[in-house]
Length: 477
Ligand code: IFM
Picture 1: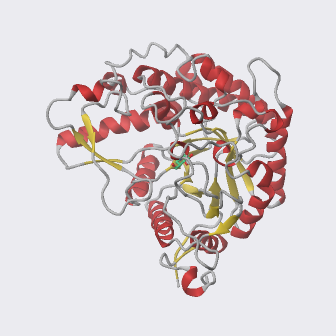
Picture 2: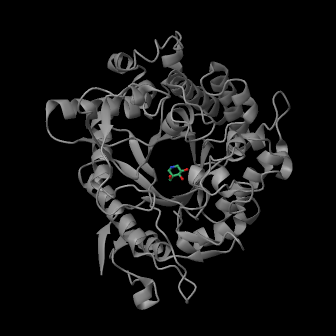
């Protein structure tokens, strides 16, 4: 028995990121990134690990492409590691680094899988952080130069070019909360970083178009927040609106409308005067985009903090989002994933529908969605993971409901192909369709991979409670 049928031509894919899967940290002249440095700092990563080996996809990409072929996916979203391409300040481009991605792209195309390239998934070269990092304008300029190098080499074969992955994380987790590399806690720096990430996006789109021409499909991937008000009161709704501005409009408006919302500047006036925005920047940031990528895992529920704002909320920046000290993000409820995140697929529908209404005609893709759960390997050597199957099925159905409502969603990428290095959580959280054995680096099938295989091969969602434990076989479709 099956459920929803998806439109013909819908893209089903899977995604990873360079530092999370590649390993090979010292191969072929790769330089240091901020994540190498952060991982080497005592206490930053839960299990004290790093990405030195990860899934060793740098050497095992052919095996991983074989898995993707068996899955039947039509696209693979991966990122290029900037420190492989420009390992040292002021030195020429590292051709060996680019060669790796050229081989990867060729192998994907030979397997009939479209390469979707992300230019920046958080691994900033350390020498650029030493020069100030994203809070410095020059980092955006260097990002444009790097984008040109990659596009010149791969531009004849790449399907879609994504500039940034989740700039929210780069700016706020990296520079405000200090939970991600480079581990800084400075709200003014975080907002400067946000603007220079926007500027870097614009310069990178320009660079890709200059190298590849109008046929370049350009995009950016945003982890937009669906913020629900705790109640329907005007105050709770105002809190949700403020989260929308600092989490979403800070990227959407400059990139798609060429302006910052004056209310966003008012919300953050205590933090910065935004003097880092120069004449002409917004025209550079607003570039034609072929598709907008949305990463979705979980929504938040918010309300104004009851009572006076304690000084502790402003001291040493414990609040992740600049200017939101007076907003309370409620603890997630319901069955949580192993990340402690709630499972609310309606958030995906609501975001896609709102985007479609705000930006009519803009193609949308879900470029990440998935869940971490504790996995155990059964005696049959497989991982039976009904919670992950149920999460995936419910969110893909939520995407279907957005399609029903008219949202032009053209693709979905499951996060992630493999269990991998989950940033500050190290290897303790498993998001993969395939299990990675970190001792042997072998990959093995989870039920979620079988469920997704059945979906992508038929373009039709199978029953969500299907389990290979029951039948030992993929479901009939
Ligand atoms: O693993 C990350 C990924 O790198 C970016 N999006 C969220 C995922 C899960 O936390």
